[in-house]
Length: 125
Image 1 (tube, rainbow, N blue to C red):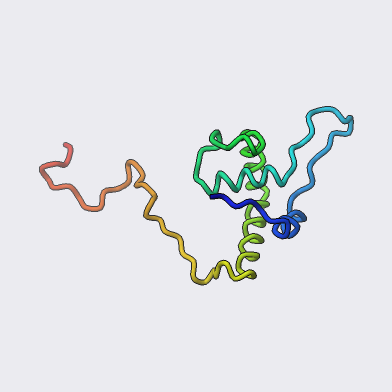
Image 2: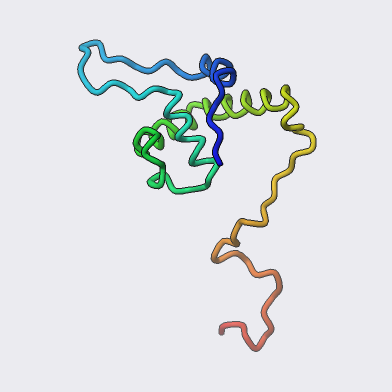
């Protein structure tokens, strides 16, 4: 089950988020709260689900995906994930020097070079 951000975690990373832009004329739809959007993003990243499968308790998936793209391109996501990881390490939930990445789930790309040369009988002319 996905665990939401604690108030302590949020207070730690909130200053890292860019300020939401405001139009000078006051028109347009107001921006969704950054905490709600971040929790929606973290839900998708944690579950591996498609953006369109985001539960209704979060902002619309289009909003979360758009903000994720903006934050990723601006380097905000890297700062946020680093801050959250450091918080987990400080609270002794995770020790980064013992972590590893398992790539056994990744599929081979189509058209990748074969591991061994095919026999002469199977080579196209």
